[in-house]
Length: 397
Image 1 (tube, rainbow, N blue to C red):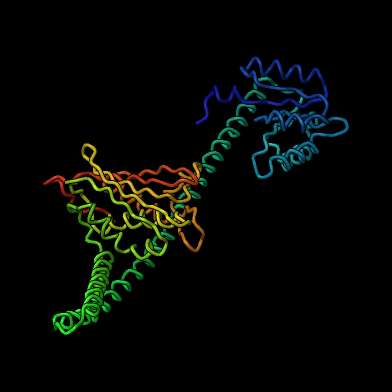
Image 2 (image 1 turned 120 degrees about the horizontal axis):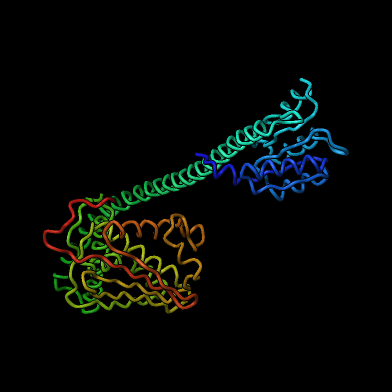
């Protein structure tokens, strides 16, 4: 929508080598309420003035020395390119050929000299209204193009995330299947070992080795059970969860990695920790991601991961702190964005923290990060305490 105030606030450039004509046009514009105009009597200065002033309308004389109005229009078209060329031609040459040539060159209208003041004022207003509408449409188109680009980029990111999730799902099903296949023969091996141990025919050394073998097979069977539980399809239902048990289960999956890298895990669990409301496999996914990130941040020997739980009002807080390489301050605001990662390409997809952030948000909690490069990182996870009768029926996965 273009108002009368918009029109009179427009920028107008007067181009005429005759000073008297320029002065007359200036008085006409002032009388009609225009205040934002400039004048050029030397056609060689027109282009520079046009670039700096960026007028909404040019009142252009055709018959000028050195550079005539037709040549100026050609050069203005190079500046405006595909845009609207805001030119009103003023000419004493009233023949049809001149008028048609001016219109073909891009002029929006023409007025014969000497002109009627009422006529030129009307034509100026008409051209300015179209020019301003054209600018508004261009601005709206640019906004739409930016929104389309943003939406396209978002859809592509979600598509990549979906593809990655499908790959993880396939890997998870395979892991659960392998865990099931491993569990059955291990159970048979453990039963045989227990029978041997119970025969009382072993010396003390062999008895100790048999006990160790039974414990190790039990440990592997327990690991296989946790794998099946972790990768089973999501129920989508929020229940009362023990966060200590959640983190213990996920630590059991990482115990070999911790041992190989000589990482010490310190648990500082609060007593009588209330249960939280959560979808079990989703909360486990968050816990595993935090533990995995902590492990991967530790590059040197004798690293340490601390898991600290506490209660604050209506929330349970878990802090996962490592003594790893840390995160640069400029990277921290971006770590929860999809596909952003500070890891090497072969190690990180940039989805772990983004997915974890989404899970925690949907659970009504929060996740924050504090880090010092070279000293370590601390992630703080907060989830609402479980309330009887307040269990969610369904939480989006």
